[in-house]
View 1 (cartoon, rainbow, N blue to C red):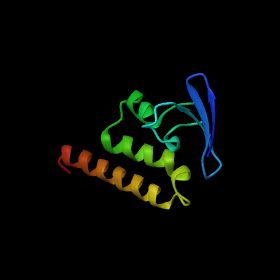
View 2: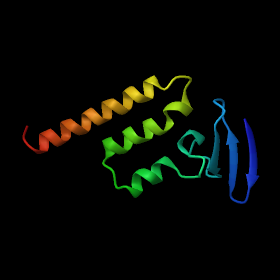
View 3: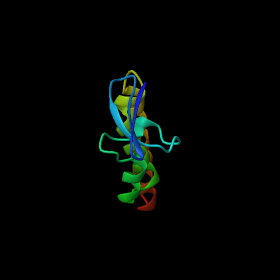
View 4: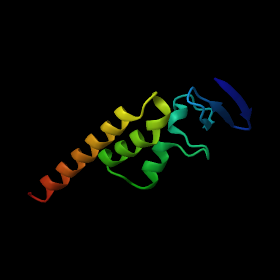
Length: 94
């Protein structure tokens, strides 16, 4: 993995060849940070998403970056969207 420091950001090339713009906060893995520096958690927070929808979004954001295949992340995202549908249906009494 190659890291290049630039101000308070560093650019990291991960094993899938993606270059991520990452803050020096080592708690946030590079697969959750877009090339423009946006962190998935901050995007979810900014859109004020529910837990299940936010989790689905983060699984989709990292799907191509974390593992060799995106299948498991996509399946997890689908499961959380189904959980959200169940929650909505329960609230509406369906």
